[in-house]
Picture 1 (tube, rainbow, N blue to C red):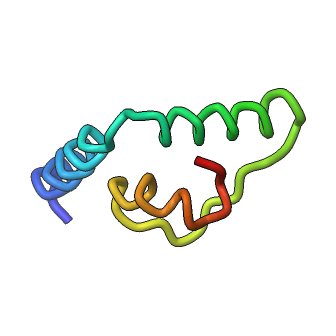
Picture 2: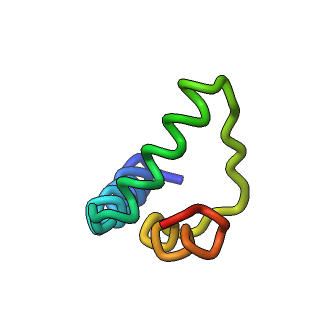
Length: 66
């Protein structure tokens, strides 16, 4: 893979992340992760996530309150 192609992929991922809506749902998810990891000493396990925009869309179905 060329450096040009790698740069294109990174730029594509940046655009996907920038399109995540910063609303109440994502704020609640971030607060929940912060509480569970940083305040209670828990861990986060990430497995098989797709595009960045799908994370927010699926958070409610993943058992995360919101």
